Structure formats: C-alpha cells, structure tokens
Length: 581
Image (cartoon, rainbow, N blue to C red; front, side, top):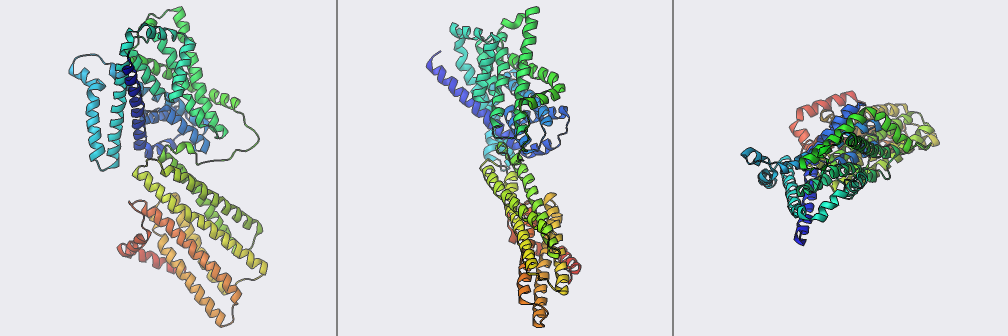
C-alpha cells in the first residue's frame, strides 16, 4: 500500500463523513418542522417511545443527534426520563438503517437489476437529479431534497474511495495479523469504542469497518467485538452534551450508556458462551458489508427486546447513579443542545414565550385590580413578575440570536421573526403593569381617589383593557388569526375611550369638580392603558402577518380597513356600543 493509497483513504474518509453530515442535516431540516409535533404525541408507553425514536433516527440518520435532542428535552422539562428511555432504544435500532444502505455496495451479480442496485450505478443518477433540484428548484423543500441526494452521493463516493484505497491491504500480512488481535473481545471492544468516541458517530464507524471488510482481513470474530464497542463509543456524544444540564438530563445520558454497555456485554457473553459450547464455524470466515449490517442490527434489536420491558430497572439504575439532593434544580426550557435543530429550538422558545406572556397577562390583571383596592402583597407580586418577564426577554433574545445563526427553513425563519417581534411587546406589557401598580401606590399613600363619575368611566376603560388582553392571549396561545382580527378594532375603541375620559375630565376641571393633581394621575393611567392596547395590537398583527411572507404592520392595518372594511367597521361599531361611557 503506497502513500497515495493513504491519501485516497483519508480523502475518502473526509468525503464519507462530510456526505453523512450534509445528508443528515438536510434530512433534519426537511423533517424538522414535523419533529416537534411527532414528539408532542409521546405518552408514558415505552413501546411508542421506541417507535418514535426509531422513526426520527431513521429520518435524520444519527442516533447521536436524536439522543442529544432527547437530553435537551429532558433538561427543559418537555419530556420525562421514562419517556426518554424508549426513544433512546428506538434510536439505537434506527441507526442500523445507515449500515444497510452502505451494505448495498457489496451486492454481487451481472444482471441489469443487480447492477442497478449497486450505489456505484445509481449514485451518479441521484447526484444529477440532486444538482438539478438544488440549482433549478425555487421551493425550499425541493432544494432540500436535492441536498439530501447530493449528500448521499458524496457519502457513497467516499465509501468507494475508502474501499478502493484499502483493497491492497489484503496482500499485506501485517494488516491481516492486526485484525487477528481484534478477535480478543476486550481489545476489539476498546478499539470500536475509541474509534466511535473520536468521530462521534456509530454510523460512520460502522461504515469505516464495512469499507475495511473488502480486504477480506476482517472476520466475524474480529468484527463482532468492534461493533459492540462502537455502540458503547456512541454514548460519548450524549455524555458530553449533558454537562451543565439538570439531574434528569444527566440520567438520560447515563441510561443511554447503561443500555449499550449492558446490551454489549450481555450479547458478547451469550455469543461467546454459545461459541464455547456449540462452536460457530463461521467465526473465522471473512465478513462483508452485509454481514456487518446483520450483526449491528441483530445486536440492537436483541438488546432492545430484552431491555425495553426492563425500562424501569434502567430508570432506577440512573437514579442510583445520579442521586437527588434537597436543592431544587432550576427549570430551563431554553436548552442550547436543541439549537442545532432549529425547528425544535423555536418550538421550545414558543413554550418559554407562552410562560412570559402568562406572567405579563397575570401582572396586568393584578395591576388593574389594585386600582380599586390597594394591596401591598399584590403590588410586590407584580414587581416580582415584571422582573421575571425582563429575564425571559433577555434569555429568549440571546437564545434566538443563536438559533438565527443556523440554517433555517422559510417556516422556521418566519416563526423566529414573529417571536422576536412579540417578545418586546410582552416585556412592555409587564412594564405597564408595574407603572399602574406604582400609580395605585402613589394614590394610596397620598390618600386621594377619583370621583364617582371618573371611577365609572375608568371602569369601562378597565373592562375594555381586560378584554383586549384576554383576546391577545387567546390569539397568541392558540395561534388563532381570527381572534387576532378582533384586537385592532378594540384598540381603536380604547383610544377613543381614553380621549373621551380626558375631555370629560377637562370639563370637570372647568366646573371645579376635580383637581389638577388627580388630572396627572388620570393622564398617566390613560397613557398606560393606551400603550397596553397598542402592544396588544402589535402582537395580534404579528400573529396574522406570520401567515404571510413579510412583516409590515402599517400596511396590514391599512389593508384591514380597506379590504375588509365591512367586517372591520362592524366589529368596531359593536365594541363602541359595548364600551360606551
């Protein structure tokens, strides 16, 4: 084997790993918008979790990516440890799909059908179709399919280069003797685990072993412990990802490790015990790519069949390994492990934003309640909520900036833009809740209050504000554009009410029925109420505009009044009648 064969081997490995990465990311991007909705349907059934783990991993072609994603879900509280166990087992079986695809390169036969089944025959066709879709297609989905096909072609080209580069090793006695060392189960296990830990992909390490199998030096006896080690080595990615995570997330990574260690050791003990008693004749035979795929699949299916019913035992082992302490851990929904899967990260951001919105809505309701009757405890609660809302804004903004740096689909980009627009409005709603609370405190300390007539007018305004907040929350939580359409007319009505209250106050001033000091308090209250309505309008517009391709609030308001004039003014008239002073 010359130095040029080594260069070819390294180049083939580079293409193989790059092709796998390109194909995996494109598959993940294509399926990303559906992954979250699929995972949301999880129940406590380990079997359903197993099926989901298998399907997701088969789609994105990476058990490591699935496991890291699951660690992030558990860390964020989106998923329980028990649900995660089934998915991890499914991911281990799902990753065997790659080995079967790679084994196609070993198909023998001269017939047209058999020749067509070989990757060397159909990969160039896929590459041509892929580049046409990537360069000519306008739809993002078609471009993604093109990238998937190109990634697969690069992967198979790398596989062929590696296979061709190592073929001369078949005539090198030292190389053949090297693989006889791996028939030692312990040594083979360690080599497989180390190789997979370094490249952080069991699919890739199995592919490398399949490429080496063309030399004929790899036997069933040497391949089996290496494959077992590869399953253990793939746990490194999940273990690395759980640093800084909460205890349940770390337990998830530990369950992944236990599953593979117990499964690998158990499989090897059973295999070598049977070999000692029966004596498998094939153990010294050369293995091909298909044989490696069979062992890889057989191990994962067998280990899952045995350990899936024992999922509670694995859960207990994880709890024994990482014990609870008395200190309550901080809940963190924005897990950075999910940033590499933008669709999931954006969905997690929406969960956090809903919590932020709930805090803002609750703060506003409480602030309006203490306008009538001052309560110190409620005021402190409002201040605490406003502080939490500020922290949500900071964390969400930072998190979404990191997500925006990823390769986003059009849908994900639109969702991210909507969230970024809405975050500031919910933060400002919290500020206005605090402003009204401070105004109430000031009036309480000065022992002043509005007149009976002013209080009646303010009551109408408060009811309108409470409704616009309720409509906005309903539209936001349920992503209901029909409800959002009702916000803009009510925002205009609130502006009109505030203007009328101000004019009535001026009349009372002229007749000495009110004081200038109360006028300042009233003016501040009216301004806060109008601004609350404005921010609710902004949120509603963002919800409606997210269904289009752009965000143009002023254009939307204008078109709302022009294109849907009859519906808009009908709602406006009803709301004017409902909140008439």
